[in-house]
Image 1 (cartoon, rainbow, N blue to C red):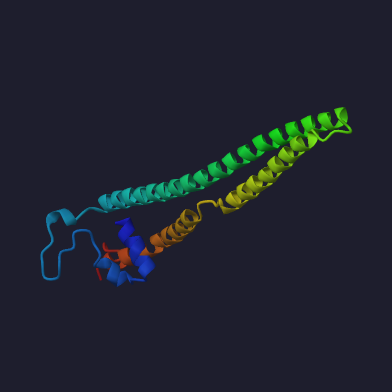
Image 2: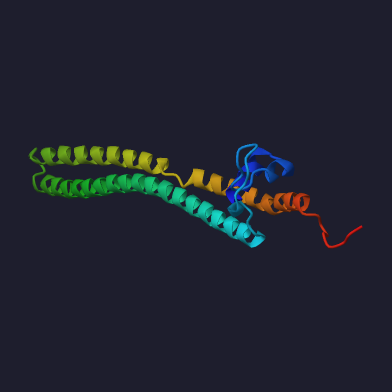
Length: 178
């Protein structure tokens, strides 16, 4: 019932049009069953259930978006881990090359180690670039936040619209007779 009310408010239906959107309303010309003539308490219970269902849906949407963002963050973290590992290897090779350079100041045996270390540094830079790109693509649950704000705005309008429709169906003071 609350979802019908919220949808009718979003679509801009008037209170008169909302009165016709009752649960169990048959096609035009048909008769309604006794089950559709519910008490006010039952209607409010139905509204409460619908609002709870709507909130659960909003939470499910946020969870789905967060899972997608978590996957992107995990990929970026994996690339950073690879970059850190290669940076450590690069540092080790640079230290070995420096040791050979100092030990063999006149020979060229250390140049091989230096080239390997520079190559690993280049790979580290490339992996770091890709990791940064992945982390820039990670976003929060933007659609869920927008949907939640729209739902809250609609639910803020529900009491006014409901009371307008309720007052048109039931007079304000039915006990006084003119």
